[in-house]
Length: 297
Image 1 (spheres, rainbow, N blue to C red):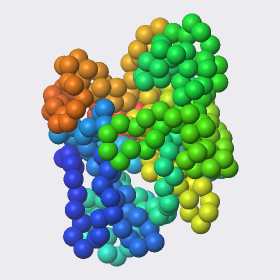
Image 2 (image 1 turned 90 degrees about the horizontal axis):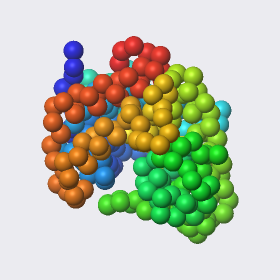
Image 3 (image 1 turned 90 degrees about the vertical axis):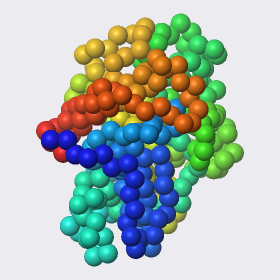
Image 4 (image 1 turned 135 degrees about the vertical axis):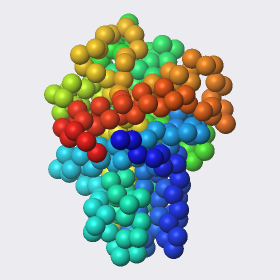
């Protein structure tokens, strides 16, 4: 049976910290409560209707990857079991179960750390114009969805409003300093390699993804979400064909629908038809099952 769709959340008596495109974040003093709603965004706009269970799926996939990569980098997770949450949160257990985590309060590093292993999306568009992405020269003659010779670090700005903009590694150094930039680049690529290799054994190609990092007591850790269908392109390995767009387990299905109706990508976003909602939920659920090996939420 499908659950109701959670589009927004207020927790009376708990101080709101921030509301993102998908997550509602609450302030617990030294810690944060991050709750993944069922909102879905595309082209930097939030759709008026959501995807049932999406927040639960995203949270559970992220928790899997945070645990999988804990030997590569520390993460922000403190607790994900609602029964062990502070007493003040116990009245909200039902709303928070499986779709929330308590995390360390980090100082956000203002760079979206994008890594690409394949040529797709905005990277493919940029390559067609300049045979490069974010200032990184690539071989001539690559086709859409081609596997790149090596994964590449193609960061963007982290815009509070509007579109993130591609930046070069030199611009990252200017933003955060050389040492931090080098750590971000190295960790981003190491995380991608380990997780992409694992996903391939489960029949999924991770074409690209993005990570967010922050400082806690001077240490760089990974925060927010990790390798979900919201932040990554997941392709079925058995259907992979170079030279075209790929079927996917992510929100590409939503993007393709929005492109097909000629939406100008400016707010307000159009309502998604029920068929697109159901299909997207199925894709997310399939990705969850394949990656974690779990059958149900």
